[in-house]
Length: 197
Image (cartoon, rainbow, N blue to C red; front, side, top):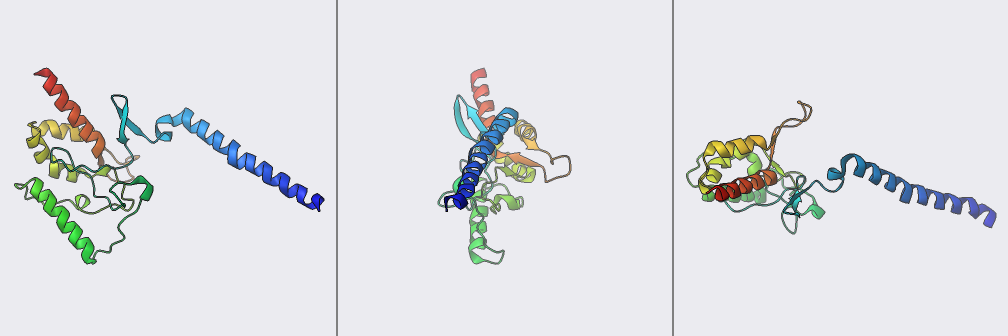
């Protein structure tokens, strides 16, 4: 009986060593050597502390910041361990109520803004973790952010342009703005303006 079990046990041990240890160590080593930033979560570090990831959205509710795309993850927004959309269809009353509430929150934060609200500011992405908004969503919020930060709109527009990522390879996807990176740049600009006074 041991004669029949021996090849199975040896195969099991060899495959465990190969696929459980050697292959993961090789892939980890290559990724750390070639793209350590991405392999470590694309973390954004300020003053020696990680403040977020450029790949996972964060919620902003203060009107002086650009707001992110809504997140449908539970039990809290932008929960990376529970990536999901809301799974609510376009005729579902719960989705319609959520969109109306989000539109109202945007209107309350900027009462004078009568422009049409871009869809990505009121609907969650499929993953619920989208760190980007469209350039149209950034433009919609631009006047509010500029006013509340006492900055010229053109200065804020320049920051938006600097943090707008173009289509990948010029053809894939749509232009997008990384909200966390943009908001951090706004804070840095405000800090520099205070120091200059």
